[in-house]
Length: 364
Image (cartoon, rainbow, N blue to C red; front, side, top):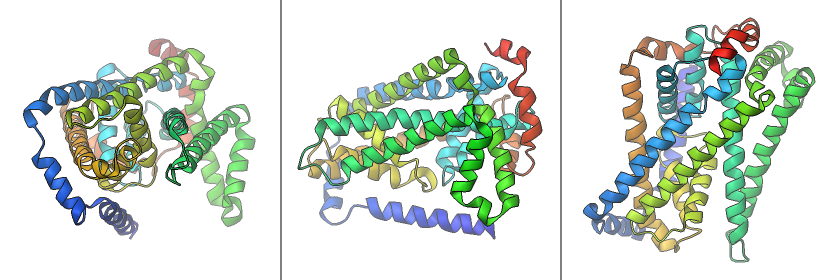
């Protein structure tokens, strides 16, 4: 029954997102004209540049994770790190509601490298730092172009995104300093303790185990290195969007490209449709509309968003399939990873890993 509910919700979100972005009337005519006028030969150099930058973002996105795993005593050989990360990226794209985020923790849990909850803590840190970086970028870009004529949604969106991720960062800090009190406050404020004490107690145990995944904040060197790789990752991502936009003849400034990238990144952290279909295109066009004429954003901009999306889907699905064909991750592991929460004894598994000096030495 739960499976069918998830499928129904996924399809509902998919339908809503596709409906929002589907061109109608004059928009459809303009989109068709934009594709028909596209010079494929002239586009090829820009496409090559974008693919090179996409490969750079893929590597940086995967490689930086090792600096979050090291403080909890986990060392993954480079090939296995890249394979697990690549499969995780594919899963995020393929599964709705960000469920793909569970795949990487589950895969390293399968071989007893660390508890799934502790590994999930590193993913939480990754997402929060990413969110804070892109929300700062979006806030700065939107603040720079604000005017009485700006859309009503622009600055509230910037403030909301920055506020959410800043609050999440505060939670990480409090959780490291006062873990028991912070976890209890979180379950109390959420109302779980009033609804069901057994459920609240179980969730508190999971949160305590996740906190060990925040240990990078006690390792300034690792944290700085992780942030540096993240800056390179997001820099290559925004630059890639700018390069491909130039190939479509869009007069998009590099600030506009980074702002659009940031808005898409913030937008897809919301419950997403399978494959981000519709959602990705809608947020891309929304970002472009702040820097380009609305007619251009809705026609050539939408064509650009469709091609950008298609390239990324093919890339991540292709790289994920190659990773599963390697010896570093088996298909059986990927299939079994869906049961991440079913058999994770997080309380006992995370403590030794977090204090294993040999593993920490090897990881460094």
